[in-house]
Image (cartoon, rainbow, N blue to C red):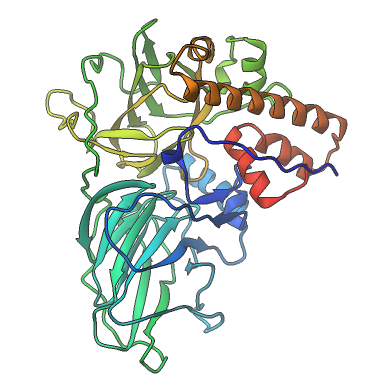
Length: 458
């Protein structure tokens, strides 16, 4: 089989993530996922970096694809997804029968530790804590925030938080806890636990008690370290909030309502990237393509739950961009009563659409391409955003636009790579699921990065 490794420059350093995973079906739930560490900004002091701390669930006897299928059937009957068997912390746990092992961390009294938490679960919202110790939260999805202290921290599927833990308690052994959240329609028969031990203490089973755990599915209230107001003049929602529809003003901004009501279906013989390469904007309806405007415009999205489906909290994730969280709420969106934050909104790439509620986000057109907007729970909808590259790149040779030159060159190389890989796959076409999966996985540039890191042959 053909294999190729490449270096792909990134347009914006602050868009880096700290995990990689497969985008094919539900593969990442079966282990095609891992942590990455990037040296990025920190808004709180620490002494030592403990690296990635991955959180996910396990379903005994079921693959992630089977869980996906069960969830699809349940949703048809307005039911929730199946419950997990246990929660894993960095890939390990002890089962109800006593098999397995706890993740173990050794800390030194008086030191402060940076911990990079990532929820890589298929369906579980997970809340974490360390007995007797506070956590200082300093980044959300790799974006610095004003540090705040908490005892429990809720992570939606796909979210990442960097926290600082001060080893300032009595020497001993303490439970680190990771628990599936019923308030977010997640469940697990087991509770994730790890053992944190002070270096001068005898290692053993902790006898520590948990902090009082909050309920519900509200995301933590945060404020960004760098204040970035968002223009609001174009956000005037007169669209139907129960169906997906959009108004894109030529040369201006776009306003989109996305009602979570259907998945994306793509003919992989003619993927969205192929349409871009050919300059063809006649996308099939099933591709769920929403066009955005060119560089400098703003895109305002009001994401709502379909009232005819089961009310479920949805983690909404956008590829290729961060977005500003303008507001979230329960029930039907009402502009007259919605509390929207335009002055100092948090910027991140994954936020929760509350069950039977709404989520308002905004992002600038600053990274041309075909990008997925996804809900991170099984069998839930996907939209693809397509940003025109022509006007963005037409000014790339103007004075003072060296950054644009880099972005456009990068974009061109990505197009060429996708085209080349697609032709190779056609030559290698077989009926094996592995080749079909690879065809699916090369749809986006972010997945190309995944394949380089995983060194999976094409």
